[in-house]
Structure formats: structure tokens, C-alpha cells
Length: 231
Image (cartoon, rainbow, N blue to C red; front, top):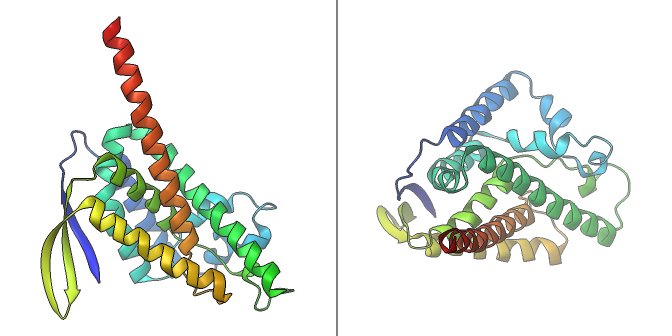
């Protein structure tokens, strides 16, 4: 097991949006502890997704437990500031929400396929009625963008493997391994028709959306600067 502590890649601007997102997620989680019924009211339940479209956004700010939110917020805190620095505050917020939506949409499609393959009917043992919640889809987009934008950045990582130690790992290695992990367990979920309760395809979809965004953005940025200097 490996957990990022920080990256050696200081941003040029203050990460207002990243810190605000962390604060909002924590505040909502505390509210969940007081009123747990909001999980069913605002999580993304695939069967209700199109009739109640607000769920595509609200599910990103809900979490299923302490470890769930702690893990997600650590990743957002470590990787979000540089991606925000690259895109700018407002653009980063809009992209974050878009990546979360794409991630949820991919997981929705996979869930629908699994449900059809299982021939499940009704709300019992039917994945279409299982709540989807968490910021991990949007944060996966942040990881995808980070790996494209800063592949050689150093990630200071806490590693649990027989002994506990701290190592420095290149971003492309750390995030690349994380993505392969999602692919492997996503394939297991898909082909065994036994959902594990982890939305691996939301992670995969969000990651690919973030990586593609970063590749397109960089290309446009280069064209823009070339045109500017020609003028």
C-alpha cells in the first residue's frame, strides 16, 4: 500500500479552489454524520439518475465513511493545487465537475450493462439501485491531468510493505501504477458480474477524461503561443 504525502512541485498561485473543495467535502461529511439520510437523497442512484439530474453533481460531495473521505481528500490536496495552478481557478473548478460527471457517466453505463447481464429486476440485488457517492471520480480526473502535465514531478510517498517507509516516486510511476490497479480490479468486477462496491470504472473514466483534457489543453497552448510570437 502506498499513500502520497506531498509532491515536490510548488504551485505559483494559491490553490483557493482545491482548499475550498476539501473544506466543503469535510463539512458535508460532518453533516452526513448528523443526517445520514442525505446519502440516499443526494447520492447517484443509477435508476433515478435522469429523473433527478442534480444527483450527477451532489454525489461528488458525499462519502461513505471516514477512510473514504480521508483517502480522497489526501489525493485532492496533494495533486489538486498544481492542476488548479495550470488551468486557473474557475476553469479548474469547471473541469473538476466535468471530470466527476464523465466518471459517473462511465460507471453508470457499466452498471447498466452489468444489470442487463445479470437480468436483475427490482430494487433488490440490482446494481441500478446501489448508491454511487464520492469525489474519487473527479479526483481521478485531477490525477489524469497531473500525470500529463507533470510526469516527472516527485511524489513523496508513505509505503506500507513489511515495513513503513517514505520514498520519492516520479509522478508517472505513482499515478501509472494507480491506474493499472483500477484497470485490473475494474476488469474483475466487469467480467465476474460481482460488483465489489468500489466504482473502479468511475476512476478509469475520470482519469481518462483528465488526461485527455490535459493533452488537448497543452496542444492548444503551444499553438496559441506560436501564433502570439509570430505576431
